[in-house]
Amino acid sequence: MRKMAYANLFQNLPDMFFRCKENGILEEVNPTGNRFFAHDRKSIVGMNLLDFFAEKQNQSHFSKKLLSGNPLSDYEVYLRKRNEENMLAQISLIPLKSANGTTCGYEGILKDITTKIENEAQIWKTSIELAELNIRLKEAQATLVEQEKMASIGLLAAGIAHEINNPVGYVKSNFLSLRKYLESLLGLIHSIEHVLSADCLDEFHKIERNIELNFIEEDVEMIFSETAEGFDRIMGIINSLKSFSRIESEQTAGKFDLNEAIESTLIVARHEYKYIAKVEKVLSEIPLIECNGGEINQVLLNLIVNAAQAIKSGKSTKTGCITISTWQENHFVFCRISDNGPGIPADHVNRIFDPFFTTKPVGQGTGLGLSIAYDVVVNKHHGRLITQNANGAQFTMILPIHEHRDRETQGNLQ
Image (cartoon, rainbow, N blue to C red; front, side):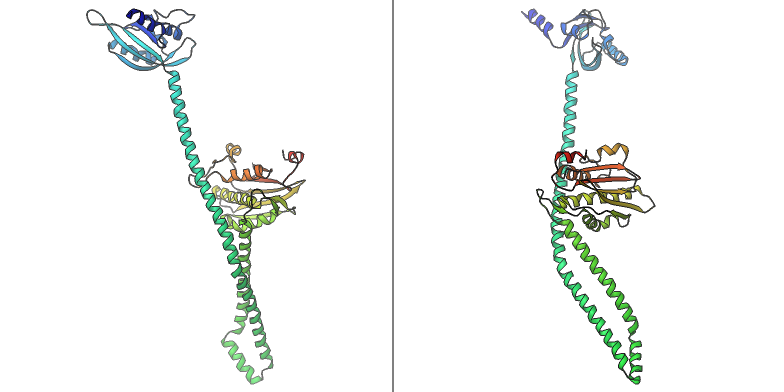
């Protein structure tokens, strides 16, 4: 009964069971072993197990193991199968002893662990990919939280701009009134000068010299002019901030002045480029477009800041230049923002709009700015965002004048 069980196990074991001499010559092999290695269905009995080793250095090492006469457990080695493919095998040996106690051969089991190792490698690969995905998800979550903060800051900035606008308005109004009053007083002084008698006039001129009236007149005019310019700049920044920060529903689109948006965005982003580059504007007369103004403002901001950062990364001694152009062609308006920075590396051009792709050092970029810009222009507004190198980086945004175009008109963008 035991012999029958042994014979059944020998015939049907999914692993190779074998008996060999101490030099590796095979004396008995089960059908699985023949299936692994035999050519033309012939038995491999009489062949040397070492001949199936894929690497000669392993042949030498395994031969020494055989000559040692010691048991061997889970020895891993690459073997050549009958179809010339390599398999990763695990060999375990039990020495067979002769009557005088010397090793006369081995019984062993050879397992094909190729699939097992490949599965384990795939599991490791999957685990690593999941870990990387988890990191990206956390980064995305952090970015979304940051965007939510920025949206809140935008609301706050719009509110502050509105609150500041009122006091600045009446301070400017009072300032203009004060300027008129001072002009009237100075006019009165000059009128008095004309009607004074000679004796009084000498005294008047003496007082005039003591208080340096001529200098005060000149300096006051300069002070008023500079202060008026300052008020205008403050109110311009406030209006730009209010325009840039306005919140619009994703579902609604209104008439939008792209040229005006460029002017407002340049004021808001001035601190990003003012020490790095000059801005040249070539803004043509273009019609109002139907779009979500807040989203297009964000695209403009991303592209302008990107241009400034690209110029800065080039570390050129020359002053940078950002050129912004707008024009109309058929049913579309075009906006091109180009810089004279180092340009986009050729192997990055096709990935520039991929989420999380960035060439900036760790911690200095999320890799979402251009991805968001692409989503806004292409997916939400059915336009195009094209990038190319032309003495630096160049981004061209193409937007339909009307929000809903028929398929034929949209096809003109292809």
